[in-house]
Amino acid sequence: MRTNRRDDAQQLLVDLETRTRHALAGPARSLTSQVADVLDLIEAALSVGVYRRELVATLNTAGMTIALPTLETALKRARRRSREAERTARAAMVAAAAPAAAARNPEGTAKAEGQAAPSLEEIRRDSPHLTTTEARRARAESFFHDAKPEPSFIERFPPRR
Image 1: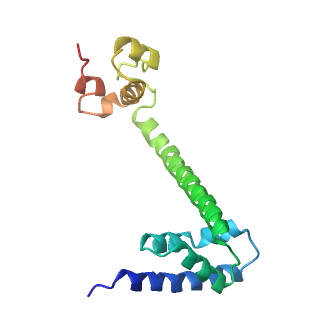
Image 2: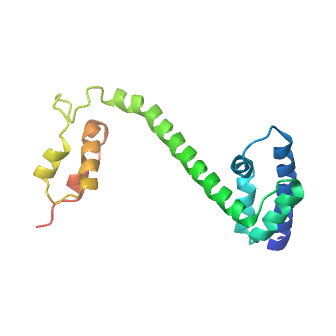
Image 3: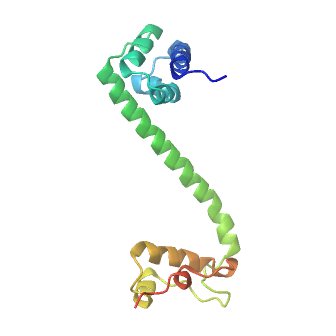
């Protein structure tokens, strides 16, 4: 049996109020950080069609004194911080993967013969039809040329003449 969206919205508002009360019970913090604590519930409520004024009423009922424009600003800041944290986490994953990639090709060479990887300028000079992004991708693939059995980027997309 499927519940309707309004029931989902009501349950989300109850959960939001409960979690907001718990968040406010701790030490005093900025309004943005308090909104960030319940950001996932706010986003879920917005996605099922809860009006922002209903969110403000629920947050005020829970003890967070907030107006609609203040909520909008706090949401914008919390979303930005969330995106920045996500980017930082992704960068950390890439940094953690870098030693494994270096172990595959410790000399940073293009070929097993010990030949240095070509610079972007060399790639652009040899293949002027490539965009900058394609040239960067081709250079990145040159580091793992011996580890990849499939054809390179340049081999897959020959120049148009």
